Image 1 (cartoon, helix red, strand yellow):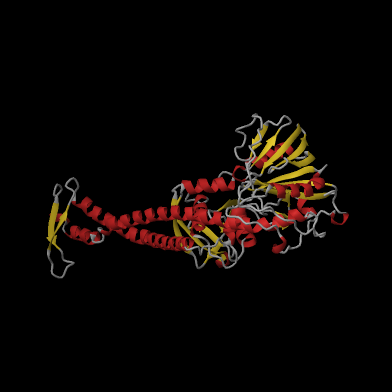
Image 2 (cartoon, one colour):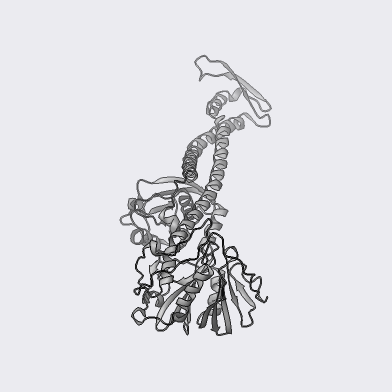
Length: 516
C-alpha cells in the first residue's frame, strides 16, 4: 500500500457494514489471533497513515488491550493493540471502545512515558507475529512492542537499548532486563491462511475495518462467558453467605422461642411473691391461667430474691417478643433472597442466564462506545454531573449519596429519575441515597444491601453499627410542605435491617477509588 487515497483523508472513520461472507475465512478448533501473513497485510495498510504522527492519548479499554489516539496527517486515528491470547491483533478502529473510569497501571505508565511521543515508524518482525511501533518520546527513542503470539501474547515498552521498561503481563518486574525475542512458534494447525478482502474505496483501512467487524462478535462472546463465570462465582459466594445468615437467624428464633410462656410465668410469680424466699431454687404454685388449674413448678435463681426472679422471666419474654418482631421479617427476607439466588444459579447452569444491561455496562466500566468524532478527541471523558458522593454497587449500578440537606434535596428532586431506588435510615437524620435504575428494572438484592449500608453509614445510626433502612421508588417520595430542604414524606416503602459490613464497605471503597 503506497499511500492513503485523498478521498478518505478525513478524521471520522465512517465505516459501513461489511458482508460477513467477504471476510477472511478460517477453520478453528480453538481461538486464535492474526496469522503472520494477515499481520503483514494490516501493517502494510496502516504504517503509512501513522508515520510522522504523534501519540495524543492512551487508553486501556480491557485488561489486555490498549488503544492509542494518534494525530497524523491532519486527522485523528485510533490504533488498537490486543494482547488477549484469543484475539491478539493490531489494527485501526472506527469506533471508540468503552474505557474504565480509572486507567489501569500499565495505561498510566504509558501515559507518563509516551504521551506526545513522535511516531518514527511501524514495522513487523519478518514472518513473525510481532510488531514494533518506534517512537521518540521526551526521554528519547523507545519502542512499543506487540507480541501477538497466542498464549504468550504481551505488550512491552522498551528503551533505546531494547531494555524493558514495563510489560502488560508482569508490570515493571522485568524493568532493566534486556528484551529477548521469543522463539518463533509455528502457526496453529487449526488456522487457514486468510484470503484477500474487497478493497472498498469507501473504507480508509479495509483490513482494519474487516478485522474490527470480525472480532467484535468474538469479543462479545468472550465477554458473555466471562460475565457468566464471574456471576457464577458471585452466586456461590452469596448463597453460602446467606445460608449461614439464615442458619444463624433460625438459631436465634429457636433460642427465644422457649421464652414464649415466660410472661405467664412472671405473672404467676408476681401473684405468689410473698410466698417465695431468697435462696429457693424452685417455686411450686397453681397455674390459674389453665382451666384445669394444675400445679406448676418454676425454676428460680437462688442467688436472687423473688422480685429479681420475676423480673428475669418478664425480661426473657421481652426477648421473645423482640425476636418475633425483628428476626422473623429478616429471616423471611433472607429466605426470599436465597430463593432468588438459587433460581438465578439454576438459570446459569442451564445456559439461560443473560447479563442485565447494568451488568454488561459494569463489565466495561464506562458508557457505550461512540463513533470517533473530532469533538471526542478535544474533550476528555466527562464525569457525571452533580456534587454527590458516588459509588458503584456489587452489580455495577451507580449509587449517589447526598452530603447535606441541600444536596439531599437536589439529589432526590432534581437528579433522581422516578424509577430510581431511594433509601434513607429509618427515623433518624441522614443522607438521601439513590440507585440509578433503568426504567422498569428491579434492583438486584446485593445492590439494595450496598445502598442500604451507605444509608446507614451516613446517618446518626453509624455509631450503633446497625439499624433499619427504608427504601422505595423515587416517585413515592414527596417534599414535606413548609419543612427545611431534604425533609420528605415517603409512601409504599419497605424496610431492611442492616449492619455495617466492613467487607462490603471495603469493596465499595475499592470500586469508588476513594475513602468512605
